[in-house]
Length: 315
Figure 1: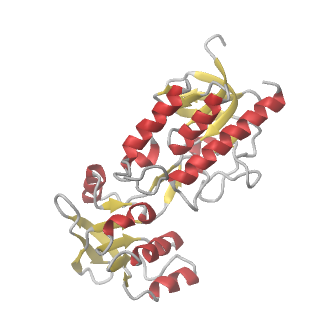
Figure 2: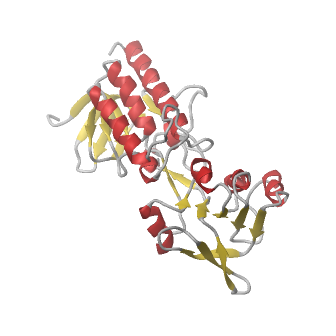
Figure 3: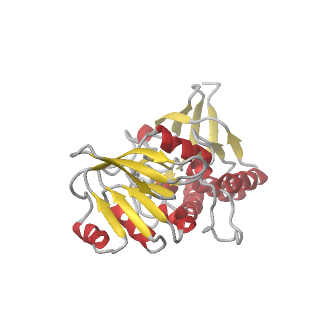
């Protein structure tokens, strides 16, 4: 037991939610320890321009914003560590967590801010543009602004795909929606909304073969799965809206999750989970908004809830 580390507050994950929780927890003298996870900085590190976060009148890149948040958390002496937690035991007190190399941590409180990962099609051409940071996106609300007056393609068939297509239709001259099957998965009201929007063209039974372009996206090669016919759709932006996967698998034996894996709040309006002392912030629990600003807000809530929990326990 000698190598077990005992701490007051463990933060798992390092996007806007985790860093904001760290800033508040550190200022409350909770001496938080943060493990940054598989993708330090979270989804925002793949976002070139963030123009909708308050306080940045000229915009900021996602990676730059994460560097600034990390520096702010360190300024208040958050112990930020590279690596990730890959096993937990929340069956009793203290809360037990293990890092990927087997280091055991006993925490009085845990803040889960592991986020969610956007699902992509997995095409090499799609990944090329994701790595170069231009033309392919999984968030129309975040990036649609850059395609004002242009033509875009969006892949997806659910409510969020319809919502994002409708959002893009207000900015873009034309939106082509690619639906893999012969019908939407979305609710009727959402499907009707896109069907009745004049500048949205819906192609059913259609799959993406390749995202085209060199320095930027110029089009998408698509295939009709019934006829086998291929064609090229000109576009400058290619949006993927086939869902997100919350990074919550390691908690499923202890924490209540919904049917798609998002953590359920035990008490709406708080960050509390069903396990006392475990709180959640950001996209691991949020399938509705998924914005940096809302994640930061819930990070603040989680730290304040954790602080009150510790005070009540006499820590």
